Image (spheres, rainbow, N blue to C red):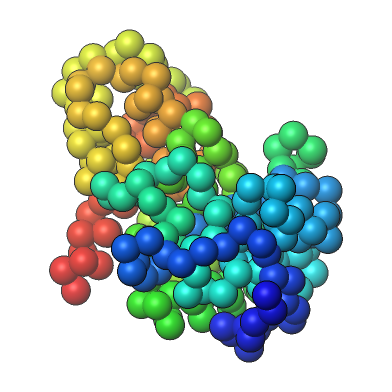
Length: 256
């Protein structure tokens, strides 16, 4: 089951059992970033490689920047689960998944060390270059599975990646303490506009004009990635304007 690494940046190979051909001859067009949610990278790698885990990924980056490849990029890894982006529900067939060692929210959720971030940047740069993955297709697990997943979370430094040419980032409008925003059950044009923008960007949300439970989950996912200062699923002015800026930046990239 062993294989040659796809990148010279990988320090080790640990072949995962759960891997298979990409369905429908799909090619990687998305890069999805996760955190492991486990106490150590060694435990994460061991679990991700086991058949009984029911999961796998292409790469694990430990807190020291050591990169292990588990699944060849040409194959489908089982990292995204039930997910959606821009009409596609088989995210595993269309993506490459990187697991970043961090014990996660249930276990203290420490910061991502600089050595680790540098390795994630370098690996991501290499992947998006080789597969021509667009900046707005570099995503969090929480983006493709809102509500079900919250990783890599609000502490992950997306700005750091964007400064190095990976992913899409805009400066979020500052959060105002006197603007609690619209909450569940709110109806109106502002909610409808936000839902349409979320859907245009890629999220799975219905433009109903009502801030329902599903919209709240998607708003939280958006905030985790693009407006992490306050992640509450409410539609405040900061979230609204930041979303508009993200959609416009994505459109400009597509037109370039």
